[in-house]
Image (cartoon, rainbow, N blue to C red):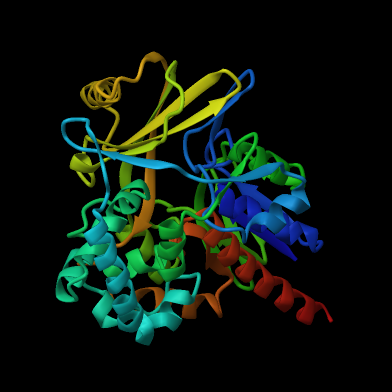
Length: 407
């Protein structure tokens, strides 16, 4: 059996690794001359700075790290919040916290009829009551404290305007277990040498990775799938697509509808080296959800050096970068120098005018009979641990089918 994987981000690398472990021949196509996607770590001597994915929210990925002999640590994420005057403030008052706990109990009852849909690691059928915007949902059910509590995390995940994002996407990413983990301050997972180390270890177990080869055509031909790049073509039994492809690259009407409709949010990461110590992850309450404004920053102290990565919605422009830098300095943080600026496009999703209740269900149904399969953040909530569960399940199905057919 031959399988092609299009896209060498975490999902594509994981799928290839798991397949090759079972003796399946795999080829990865990556349009860039580097692999890893959002798993990007920049290195300077003994300092590892994450520009994309910072950590996982659960321990589900630990088995993979152990298998690959990747060193990791668990730690607490200390958070602080500042207002428009750069004063430290509480996210919620004691009274609002009490209200939050009451609302969480009600939310559990409200979501109970939809729990099976929300527990599935992949997107699927969307209940009508979750098709509305998150803001409309919390207003309808009087869940204002939940909105206040979750807003900073929605912002850090790149969800953008809460009037636009559907409740379904929010509760797929932030289920009750995740919300309770945030409330109780559960420990999080990070990799000692950064997420690029994980990608490197995966690549050491994958035989055929093709760099800087953008796929131009994916087409089912009889019982095979033809994959064409600018420089040649090859045939495979199965093709796994992890990333948005240009219109009409996939010769399949349903998959093309997804590729045409799916959108991402532009997100900027700015990395600095600072002299200030003992910094906490800091959210700018007055800026949350606003384009062109600093949303939060994440500091990391390694040895005697401290780095800080700040994030904002928008495209890289000097005015936005200058504003982010000023906001950091206005907190009294001494910036030694800027390390880099990176443009990201995150959170693949469909806007409410494009999303139907059956959209993802139709994709799942097609994949049961097609030799082309969409995986990763195209069809799943894009946190690292959820992608691990989602991709692993898909690969297990492919392997099971392959072994049955071979027998």
